[in-house]
Length: 327
Image (tube, rainbow, N blue to C red; front, side, top):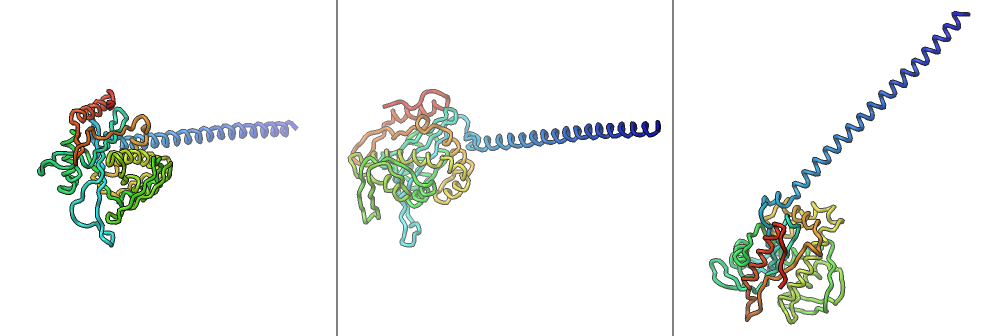
C-alpha cells in the first residue's frame, strides 16, 4: 500500500515537474519570438530610416545640382515651332514666344518666377542689339541662355523648352488646370492656325484651352497682360503637378513629361525641383515678377538698376535676408 502511495506521489510530482518544465519552455519560446519580432522591427526600422535618408539626399536640391552657395535658376522657354501637314517639326530657327526664369532658393525655401517680355531690348552676343526672343532663332538654346544671363546677371543652371504641342500634352498630363478667366476671350487668326474662345469665370481648362488662355494678348496691355496670365497659369500648373494624387505617380509623370520637352536636366534634378516646389506654400513662398522695365516703340526697355536690385534680393534670400522689394 505504501508502495502504491509512493508511486502515485512520484507520478504527481513528475507531472508537476513536466508542467513546470513545459511552462518554462513556453516562456523561453515567448521570449525568443518576442526577441525575434523586436529584432525584425529594428532591422525594418533601420532599413526604412536608411531608405528615407537616401531618398531625402536624392531629393535635396543642392545635392542634386551640386550647388550650395547660391540660388538655382532654370530658363523656361515656350517656342513657336512650325509643323508640316504630317505633324513633323519644320527646319529653321524659331523665336521664343515665352521666356521665364524659375529661381529657387533652398536656404530661404522660396521660389521666384521672373517673366521676360519677348520684346525686351537686349544685347545678343555676336548679333548686336535686338528683341530677346530672336536669340533663340539665331543661335538656339545656348544663345538664348547666354543672352538672358547677360541681361539679368544670374547664372542659368539648365533649361526646359517646349512648343505648343508639348505644352498641351503637359497640361493634359497634369489632369488640367483651374484658372480664373477675367474676361471673355475671343479671337481667330486663320493664317496662324489660332482660334481662341473662352468665357469669363473660374474654369477647369484642358491643354488646348490653357494654350488659348496664355496666347491671348488682344487687350490694352498686350504682351504684359499675357505675361500675367502666364504667371497665373504657371501657379496653377505647379499646384496641379504637386497635388497628392500626382505625387504618387511622380516617376511615370516625369518620364512622360521628358517626352514633351527638350531639357538638359536629369530626372533626379527635375524630381528635386518638384519635391522642393511641393513643400513650399504657393501663396507665401512663390513670388512672380515681370522683368523691370517700361514700354517704348517696338521694345520693352529693361530698367537695369531695378533688375540689379531684383537679382540682389534673390541672392540675399539665399542667405536668409529680405525678399524681392516692392516697386
